[in-house]
Image (cartoon, rainbow, N blue to C red; front, side, top):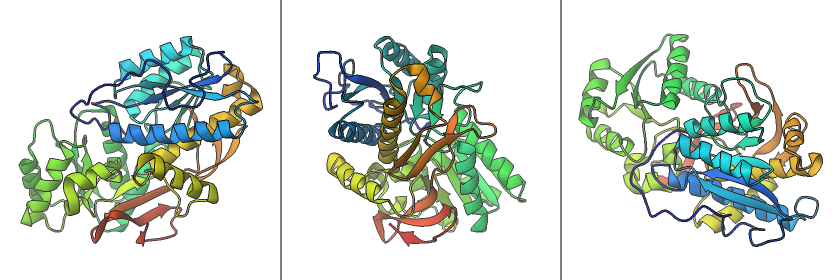
Length: 394
């Protein structure tokens, strides 16, 4: 979904072999169908998002194999850690291609996914991107890459509509240097300008959180959006704004989704509530989605994020493509416009969108939600596309 880089680095585990909990990894007869998985599992990547993405991927592989695999052959997930590093991701794509994987899945960080998609396109390796939203995943149109998450332009315009509907016309964005954040800022600025609003950039490479507060007062901003990494400087900015009595009426927002994961609530407590963000879930899960939610909760020992559902749907789509079109890479890529799968969040089909270079699921559900101030572990649906429900707690 995002290009948010976290800080610190936990001990690295060995990701040079198939993931130990993936079904089929202990087979030595070469009969499995291998799918490569790109996941941020170490810092500076957003490890929490990577853990949820991997849980969804692995659960789907388990379910595919329980249902007979790919024409009787087990599906095997070969995991590589990207650590939010585009060069590391590109190298992983080269390695996975040489290992003979039938397709590539995953990735959360947009800039990293762009590097992976560019390399997969060059190698002729089908890549189904799970979570990255950057519109330009590849510079030129490609037949090799498809995506489940919505383009950034669509999601962030919906977020802008939510802000405009709530009466916000003077927006400030705290931002850091990144293609992802720059694209998001441009989307917001263009959309607000078309509706008589303004967007002011606050460069966090030059400002302290306290200076951000002063700038919000000077610009008479009614909302501050966090287009920065997590946990820092996002957490420090939230604390500083929440403590400043001059900014009691200023809304804080995080379109990229930082408040989705439990780490946010742990870091900020009640200060992290009432911060709207984008989430890619329907208002009500289907029976399949409800079953998967229960299984994911058991795997993660916490409520699954939308990223975990994206991981599950990725494998479900690839499994159907491999069953119906075979394991030849070119035939898999040719299947994007034909594949139709009932996923956890709706029926998945791919088509072309104007200005988008990859095959795109065009009906991804999009919500604006926040954590309920009365109960920060619960989410309130504030806005949805198409709009159906407001202020529903989930």
